[in-house]
Image 1: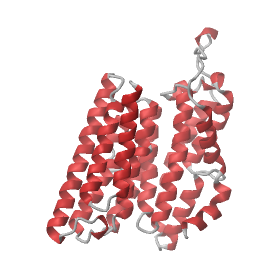
Image 2: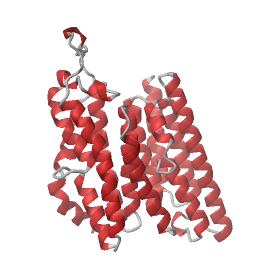
Image 3: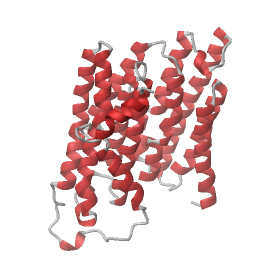
Image 4: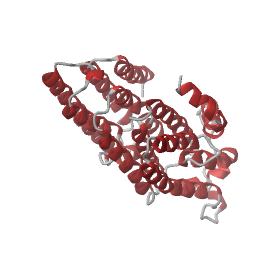
Length: 348
């Protein structure tokens, strides 16, 4: 892609998200979301592969539907209450509709089925943008929205953690596994958003760091399915030895960074007298942990099933920068001891 066009599209992505961040009016927020969607579509379709075009079409239709519902709900709210302000949502009908529209935008269950299919059709770089940056604007609106329907958020969150764990069990494609991982993490954020918005923000940022690290590891190995992970030790032995720690951090095992948000969320749910919900969320996390363990096993404990010596891939010099991977991997593995400091900052 022409670098000038790429720069304009990336600027559009940043502009759309920033407009949504800065808006207090529903029309302006909707406009930011639309700019965001239109900016990423050429990035998704740039390879002109049938799967990429199919994924782009699915993504466009889904996002257009969610944006239309959001616009309809905000217009309904203005009609019923005379308010266009995001933080002045008082009527339960438009609030519920907007919650469902935002859930469709980010891929919460049961509106999740587009996300694995879309992510599977993209390359890893665009998939990384879709899994991280594209979640920011809808979550900014989620955090500003005063939840009128706590039961709906709990149902969305719990079904997302369950389906995010369940759906990934049978997958061999890494991008689909990462899509289900995304659904599960978003479910954890949705569970806690009404009790502690700052904890949701912490979980979102932690998820971004861990996902960034995972995508970069797969990208440096040019891996798209589980079998291709088995030959990564011949190309990048040090990264291969660190990768299980990154994956287990995504699964939420102590003493890794990914344990911190899960631990704090379970603690907060227990404080809110919801021990059954906390137990169910913890049990659904075990489903996700299984496929992270499966990836770790494939990467470090198996040999590629081939006796021929000449089938190892050529080791071309990768243009990928090593510093972002090094920083994100360190953050993914080592931040748990800073949990007291981070929680103190969140309570300020």
